[in-house]
Length: 263
Ligand code: BT5
Image 1 (cartoon, rainbow, N blue to C red):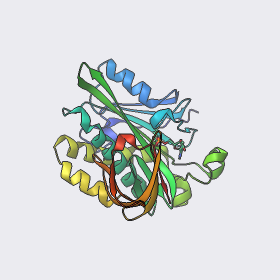
Image 2 (tube, protein in one colour):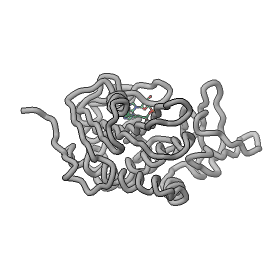
Image 3 (spheres, helix red, strand yellow):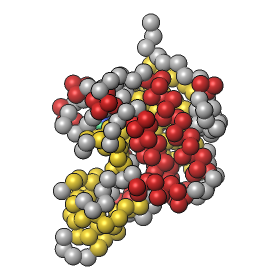
Image 4 (cartoon, rainbow, N blue to C red):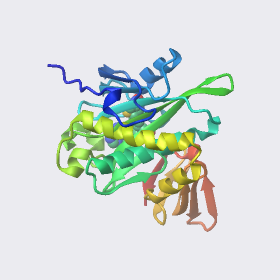
């Protein structure tokens, strides 16, 4: 019997997200596949899942480990707003992944700048927004979410065992992937609708409330240097405001931040 889960648009209480749903055994990357559907004209809100990804990826070309048991999902978005607001799509993705994890029983899921969800100091989920342009205008976006659902410590490669966690580890029980998928699409629909309606302040405020870095000592790695200090503020568009150990306050833009490590 196939391990594919079934989820139909009519199973969802959503307006846009999940208006079309495709579930596959294995894909190279759901983001790449959703992008292909986007080029073929698939509608706003189309959702793609794969039980496993052969080359799931994160930011800066990093590998996203995607074995069976996780929720690997991409949603095609065709909002009508300016390109720089891709950072808001990332924020909406992090908010939805955090909220879905909370609904699935993860006690203290928090957003870790800019695109991660952490629980008890370990990475539970990551989101990756990508865009395709037609000339200078964005034609569509793809929001990818990787949420570790039914994964145990032995499913992670050695370098991640001490750094990663899952819904199963945190909530102490397995969750059917169809339930996790429905939960994610429903909360994402709420935040995506808010974004389309222009509720930017509400999104930014909730994103800041759910972030776990304010007041903490961090080391921020940029591509060619690292800085250390105490986080004074975080903002999905403006980045991190950091009181440097050397004294002054620096503002580090989101696209310059490769990784944030707690000091
Ligand atoms: C991310 O990248 O956190 C975004 C990951 C997005 C993955 C989704 S899955 C569906 C869709 N299709 C794709 O191809 N991608 C999206 P980044 O911030 O660059 O973090 C990558 C780092 O997270 C790696 O270098 C590892 O240290 C760590 N990592 C990799 N796999 C992990 C996992 N399954 N759980 C926790 N941490 C992981």
